[in-house]
Amino acid sequence: MASLDLRLYVITDRKISGGRSHEEIAAAAIEGGATVVQFRDKELSGRKQVETALRLRDIARASGVTFIVNDRVDVALLSDADGVHLGQDDIPASMARKIMGNKIIGVSASTVEEALLAQQQGADYLGVGPVFPTGSKADAAPPIGLTGLAEIVRSVDIPVVAIGGISQENLVDVLETGVSGVAVISAVVAASDITQAARNLRAVIDAHSSYGTTHR
Image (cartoon, rainbow, N blue to C red; front, side, top):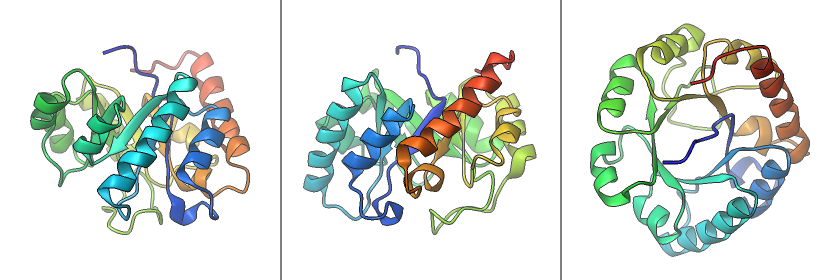
């Protein structure tokens, strides 16, 4: 697997985008400096998911940005996405690996035990959280806080992306835990200017890394 730049990981969400499409969200976020775009829309049919994923893949690929599909291994394969992100209720990473081959596999984790198991099963990176309370996911687990995030970062050898309630205001505190990047939904997708919101986050991330912070 090629080097994976997880610094700013944007997840598309039409519900909070002010009527903007997945494609519009992705293009604007990439213009602002997103390094990963994840397509997530559980309401679309399988066919519509594949069609949308194909368009998003082309948008991401044109800019050299990693494109990930949420949950659906089949959609990821059919759209030739760079990888898939799996939740705790999805198939295990070890099973996905048999299907996905060398493609990127990310796994959500909120405990050290879940993180270590995902690493053991071959995950390439972890999405860890929710760090803070979040309104973008109705079934989100209780927040793990910065302490819980830091504990997981220390426990694994694969990259960790923090997710859940991350904003411009708390971003530096999150980065101080040693994560490889941050995943955002509301902070970018709900913004009136998606490109500028992404650009503002990237400025903080890049300034932080330039001061010698070690990223996994």
